[in-house]
Length: 620
Image (cartoon, rainbow, N blue to C red):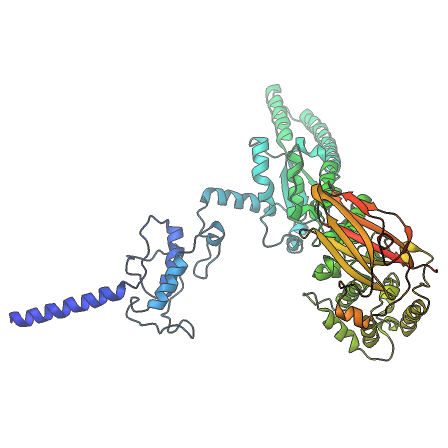
């Protein structure tokens, strides 16, 4: 009997040792004081497995009834089977649950609405939440029936990821007014905004509405007093009772809230933007975030709030980038802000090719703005072909508005080459409106035979245009480089560009025009001093690549008269600065010193620097 007991004890000990050995691989939840709201989230991974971890005693639950749970059979094709009799054997599932447990709980995660309970699990005080909800619901209940019908349409102006508009101004107005009761109710955008009349006079619109409302109220009050005097003659009451009634009427008239209404049709004005504009009525200095600036500027225009309007314009001027330049330009045109529109045009002149050409925002450029930028003498480009590629991409995006990723140049060529070959694209009905855009390009500056062949194959440009380009090239090659188009240097010179950002200190590039080779150079010295110049290179120079030396035409002329201009542009102290050699004419030889142009030196403390080298070969 004792032997049997000993045997059973040994079996029990062995099982406990095996279980202990097994559970050593099971991660345990660290013991700590956990709030019920946080504990429910932390226990969710283990509850999803259908059991408890070895160190858990209970699973936290939400106050609401939970959805019925089922044991999982298999959690993915690569996971282990779920055993129905315990969590300890499901090592992989427990490891995954422990990994989810170790994720930090931030406020955003706590506010996520789970599938089991439709309540927020954040640790915010319930009193504050209920008071805000009450403040939000009360104004809606006071709306007239017509306004309540328009709530569904007006709610589209409030993005789902933004806070309620009343929350934007509630805390600030309470702090500024020291819990003063609001005495003005503004009906606007399907919402009632509770305000204080002493702060409304920064807005010309609201002040006029308030004055009109007060005047109408005074007229109605005087009529009521006149009626009460007539009624008092017929009523025999004591003088003391009449005085008390008058005092109460005056007190009620003083405490009565004035309601004004403002109709807004501008689609740029969202409820959040309007709330930010109203909040700035209570501030000494306007404060606007860049992400809300377009809507707030529109609201400031409707409210006739000059200081806030100018603040928005200033923010937009200092924050122009590829993501907002088009929207800022349209806003500037809409509200007649010429300086802002000029700044947007100036930004596009230097960033159209190097930055915007590779971003999907290129499609948002209006056609008239693109034409204006293409014709600007300050436009920066690496060469004329890069500008043509950018314009082709813009046209492709106009024809394919659903495209959300910038296409490659090969994709664009394939798209246009697959169109019917009846006529060129610009001669079609769909392409005729883009003719003026491509007339703004300097197509005679595209001298590469490969690039011209690509243009011929896609059948984009009219055949007479291509014939004229080829004819101009043939004429220049036959006449030692003399160009036909040389009447207007600012519109007909061939442009090349260098973009200077960080290291290296030396930037150079070999260019070829009608058998003549030049090296455009930019050198950065100490103390942010730059030197820019052009230097002629012999066709036998080692700097030329093998392909260039073998395939490109070569001119044996010892001298070549060149009309050129070197221009450097940069942004300094928020304003665009321009350094230029002006238009110069020089005969370039193949030996020093005649092979080198005049050097443009400039002190430029900021980067990037946009350097343009424009060349034209006059008749010689």
